[in-house]
Image (cartoon, rainbow, N blue to C red; front, side, top):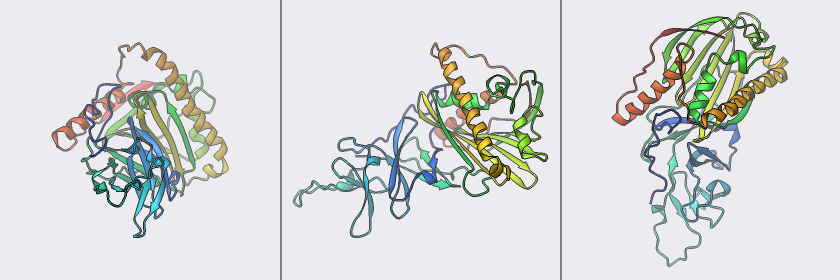
Length: 363
C-alpha cells in the first residue's frame, strides 16, 4: 500500500528533461520550520511535507493523504497517551508517523478490524545541516542516503546575514547554466557597482574537479568587479559548483570570511526555486547590510528577468550553440549529470569527469 514509490524516467539527463535522483536537495532553512509546524514544498514535481514535531524531530512525507488526497501539511500534530507524535490529516483526521505509517483512523469503530499500519505514505529522508534542511530524493522509496548532506566552508557569524528567494520560470538545467555563465555580466549586470560599459577585459581562471562538481581555484577577484571593494583588504575568492544545483562563493579577507550560497531546487519541469544565503563575520555586513542586501537582490532579479527573456526563444525548442571556453562549465554540468545517473544505475562509485583546466573568456 505504499504511496508514490516509483520514479522511473525521472533521472533522464537530456538538457531540460528529468531530475537527478539519489541525491540531496536543499529544501528550506531550518528556521523556516518551527516546532509543531509543517510546511509544503514541491520538489522535482513531488509534493513534500516538511514537518518538525513538537519534540523537535524533523521528517518529510509525501504531502498527499492516501484517503482523499488532502495535503498532510495542512493538518495538526497529535500526541497520544504514550507520547507518540503524528500528523493528522485535516480532512478526516487520519494520523501518520514520521515513518509514513498510518497510526490511527478515527472513523473506525471498535469492532472494525483493520491493520492501519499497512497504510503508508512515502517517507523522504531529511537532514538538518548548518542551519539548512535537505531532502534525499531517492529513485524509489527504498533508496536511502549513502552519503551525508553537503557541508560548506565559511558558514560563520551565526545566522545568515542575508536570505533572498526567487522563483525562476525555468527548468533547473537552464537555471544552473545561466547562473554559472561567466560572460553575461557586462550585459545582464551592468551597473556602477559591478560592471560598466567599456570595462570588459580578458579573463583567465584555473578550474579543478571538486566533490560532485568543480571549482574555480582561489584567486584575486577581477579588477572590474567593483562590489568586492566594500570588503577592503586583499580579498581572495573561490567559486564552487556541486550537483544537483549548489553554487557557492567563499571569499576570505585576512581572517574574515564571506560565504554566498545559491541553492537551486527544482519545483517542477518549468520552475526552479532560487535561494540565496549569505553568511559572514566581516564588519561590512553590519555597517552596510542594507546596501549589500539591495545589491544582492538586484543582482538575482536581473538574472530572473533574463530568464523571462530567454523563455521567448526557448519555447521554439531551438538548437543551442555552446562554445569553449565560456561555455565549458555548462558542458561540465551535463557531463556530471550523466556520470551521476550512470554511477547510480550501475551501482558503482561516482567518477568525476571534470579535469583541471585553464579557461579564458572576455567579460
